[in-house]
Image (cartoon, rainbow, N blue to C red; front, side):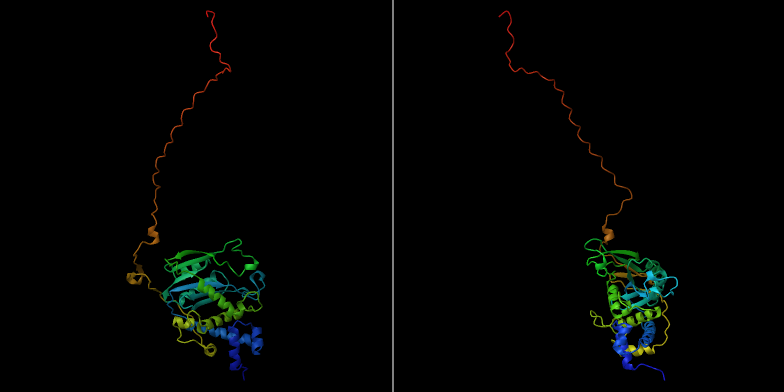
Length: 365
């Protein structure tokens, strides 16, 4: 007979893991051995990946934000040597989020390089049916990855926060995790014509804090980090499945999956546990033709489904600017200054007598 945990203990282990507890803390709370917890967590994570592939596909999200979260496996990247296996070192989690429903659309764990970025954007593209407006930070590999998967017709903008130096924006050891409250944000259009007012990474950066709270392996300055890459990937998949299906967003009052229309109710831990343990293999989604999203401003569709032509009712900021002149305007003739007055003639010195006695007398007088 196989050694299987009772249903009550399995539920307690799942609740402890999604609450951000480490394996040792879960052992103290539930009385289950560490090896059993690790095997059980790995099985839950693999089931979460299969469940995500089955549910999160064919989406019509119009605003998408992407970001990456730092993490590591066994040791930090500066300590990695050539003798270490490939999975050791930094393990960034790339995540894509729907702005309107807060749904985690796609995620990928790997190095912060071009290969992982390409695989992440390809997975995001395969789950979409509508061309979204995409926003990311200034990470350079996003540009070729987005252009290769979505094409140059996507509305894509990068937002970069320029932290200032000095007393108000210092980045020393005492303020490593608390950036200044008023960072200067630079927005740059990469492809298409995105709406700058809707371009932001605020929601996905807020998701990073929730992820670190629910996944103890991704917390900083603690001993709960992962020792193997497969366990780290499983923990990320488990947390995002719990977030999409069970975590109620306070501002929405429902879970992201309910808001996005994937499910019609908030999942309980019992339902999530049973589904993860019985979820079968599901093939990853494949890329489908993308439809253009309907613009919010007045517009008319172009023939052949090539998009929309926005109707301009008032001059845009570009038209309000004065047109550039190819040639410099003719300069006015310089105003000639009045000639200086002629210098005064030199004056000859005059000898003055102190006693003026008049003309000298003559002999005829």
